[in-house]
Amino acid sequence: MPARIYLLHGSHPSDTAVKAFEIKGLPLKFVELPISMQPAIMKPLFGGRTVPGVRFEDGEKVQGSTAIMRALDRRVSSPPLFDGPAGAAAIEEAEHWGNDVLQSVPRRLLWAGFTKYPRAMHGFQEGARSPKLPMPVVVALSKVVLPIERRLNGVDDSTIRADLAALPAQLDQVDQYIADGVLNGEQPNAADLQIAPSIRLLYTLEDVRPLVEGRPAEAFAFRWFPRLTASVPSGALPVQTAAQAATLPAA
Ligand SMILES: N[C@@H](CCC(=O)N[C@@H](CS)C(=O)NCC(=O)O)C(=O)O
Image 1 (cartoon, rainbow, N blue to C red):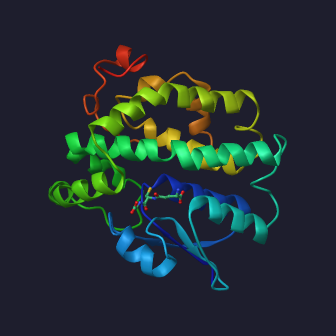
Image 2 (cartoon, protein in one colour):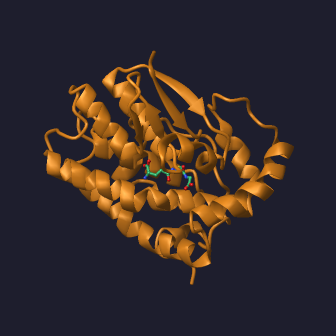
C-alpha cells in the first residue's frame, strides 16, 4: 500500500511534500482534510496540529514538510533533496529559512485578504480532490473559518503591516539564493520545494503581486509548481496602489 498523506488543499507545505514524493517517484494516497479541521484530526493522529503528515507503508508517521523531505531522503537516496551542487549546508539553511520565516507570510496575508474578500476563497478550491463547495456555502463557511484561522495564524493589523514591511527584503533573499545557485538549480532540492510554493501563493494576492513580478523569484516560483488562476483582488491589504506596493506598505 502506498504512503498516505494528510493534507489540506491549497496548503503550500502540503504542496512541498507532495512534490517531494513525485520527485522521488513514490506513489501516494491522498487524505484531503476539510478546511480548519487540521487541529482536530492531525493532533490525535500525528501529535501536532498541522498538515502535512505522512503515514508510510511500514507505519512510520512523519509530520511537517521538512521532516517529510528528510524521511524521503532516508528512504530513497536519489535524487537527493538535501544535497546538490550548492552544498548540503547552504540547502539546509535556505530550507530552514523557508520553513521558519517565509512560510507563514503568505498564510497570514491570505487569511487577511480573505477577511476582506471571503468570496475569493471559492477560487482556491481549483484542483481539489474533494467536491467543490458552491459560493453560498463558501461564504457561509467563511464566517466560521476566518475567525479560527486568524487566531491560529496570529493575523491582525500589526502582524499584517509587519509582514508587508518585511516582504521586499524577504524577496531579495530569495533572489539572492537564486543568484548564489542555492535555489533554481537543474534538479529541485528541499529549499526549492519549500520556498517556491510560498512565492506562488504570495503571487495570488493582487496587492503584493507587483512586488514579485519581474524578479528572478517569479519565474522560479512557477518552474516546478503551476501558476494558480485563483487570486485575491487588490484592496484587500493595507497597500494603497500597485506603485506603492512596489516600494512600501501604506503608513
Ligand atoms: N512548518 C510546518 C507547518 C505547516 C502548517 O502550519 N500548516 C498549516 C496549513 S498551511 C496548518 O495545518 N495549520 C493549522 C494550524 O496551525 O493549526 C510544515 O511545513 O509542515
